[in-house]
Length: 284
Image (tube, rainbow, N blue to C red; front, side, top):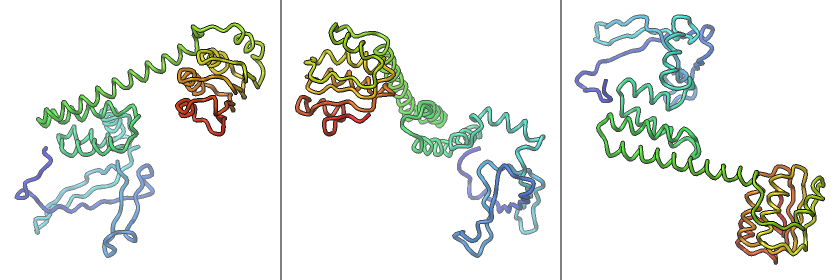
């Protein structure tokens, strides 16, 4: 079945549909005549995915074909097995542009399938895990259409998403490692001070003459592995880019810290941007 119909083969068709709202409850329909663009016509809107049973097809004297159908419930026993098989073949059972595109694809209507797949790609989030699968399926559709250049283009996009996902997994893995492994840099006095205040809600490390590399210790013991701390004071300590990154990464994983105190004049502009500092404080 192709996407285009030869006009010389066209015939007039009239659909006569019997719909009983008492029988069909899973796929609603409504009279939209009052809001229709053609107010003089009676129009009924059926929900996408509605199922119609074919009752009869007749050809009148005026050469118009009349197709009699009845709106059916997808709970009918005779249809349930067929519908289940279609849902398993075309997706997870949810109605979406992808499931519609897949159905058209299986029917051989490749241009329409491509159209609905593209619309679905444009509608979902850039971070949606389904994007890679959609790109692969668009590549397969393009290949069946004989457009091999476009097919390669779609498959390259799928590979790009796969690589990005792998990079994200590596970053997440590194974050897990950062939470479980203590920093290589050591400062016994600082570690002792933090350990003595392990169960307190506030920790004052202001004016402690801490260096940039000490922030890895603060991040590990105060942010990654402290479940009670709500206020951390780091005023008047020299925090550079590396220390700021350690703090910023740890803050993302901390669930209890409410306030991180810093002094603006001891912090570089780049560090302020990384930590999103306002008025010398970070409100987490």
